[in-house]
Image (cartoon, rainbow, N blue to C red; front, side, top):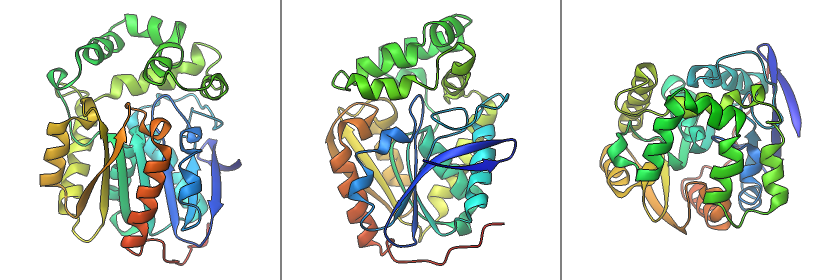
Length: 293
């Protein structure tokens, strides 16, 4: 992995592939760029692929910050600037998708396309979540959330093995490694409490509504939304139908059966779908790279 200094810390990232078109893969909670390891080989023949670890996660630095959505956006902006990335295609899962759409809304001239899977397309209600997920996120927002996430490492030791029973222990160990202590697990709890539910947190909901408006109004920017079955939660049928009716220039492509962590379940299907979409919109064509400051 490469590293680059950003603000008061650093981000680690993978950088491989052909051509100069940057295609940036953004992970979510509680994973890292390791999420994309079996997706990238299907895309690197067509574009330059970069996959960073978000601040506080994976092999990136862990500064003393709150790890809210705005914090991640600031460090990610600094990473884009440090590498001089323009006319990028963004591929995002979970909070990585939210960061991708947020970046597009704030820097529309720097985004050539967006591909998404299992991410925050709009604010939700508890009623739209599976019952078990609703109970879990109520727990995270309570004082007991600190015990569950910080002390018991619930995201790594329970959520990932439950959703991904086929995940080899070696890969689970990669996801576990950045979080050896309760203090190191703070980013996972912060992300859980950012979930836009029932109108809160208000600033996160407002930010998601702003990028939703940009997704709806950005005709000419190709967008890809990949879906998995069964369609529940973030990728529920009602949410996908809303996005299909709302977002400009959106293509919806099923990638097969899978869980929320679809890049672990369907890496080949996701990789091939992204590569085909890139070729179909000439998004694999070379672009000039801005000189890093």
